[in-house]
Length: 140
Image 1 (spheres, rainbow, N blue to C red):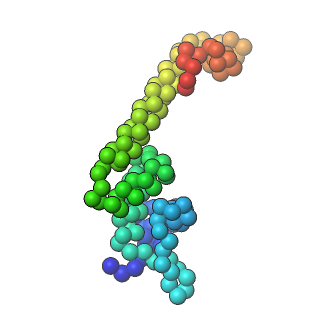
Image 2 (spheres, one colour):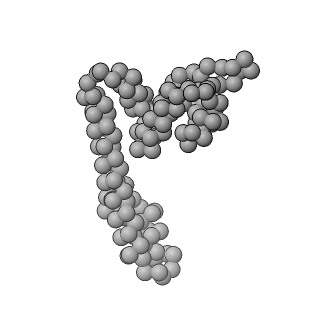
Image 3 (cartoon, rainbow, N blue to C red):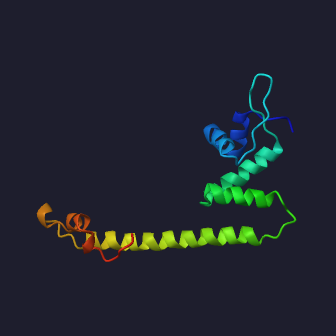
């Protein structure tokens, strides 16, 4: 493959140029070789790695987890136990967020259903927002 400029890499992977530079700065992408005119160039491995990063980010993985997963992917003969563990931790985080969102939805729904549409002085929405003790759930 002919080396790609950063704009071509962005087009091929759907990752914006500033994001590519950021991934390089935090070490998710290795520093790109430079041309004589100091422009970055990328190869097929950079495309593969950037697609991996993008997909992991789309799935909500944090940067540090992606760093660990990339290191594991770079060692294909290794056991996948650690990758599975990272994914399970992420799944638990997703489940926790869903539980908080369900509680949040129930709280806002109750708040709006109890509103009588009278004066602001008697507005249930304003009352609940002003006093967390009026909420049914502690964590939301």
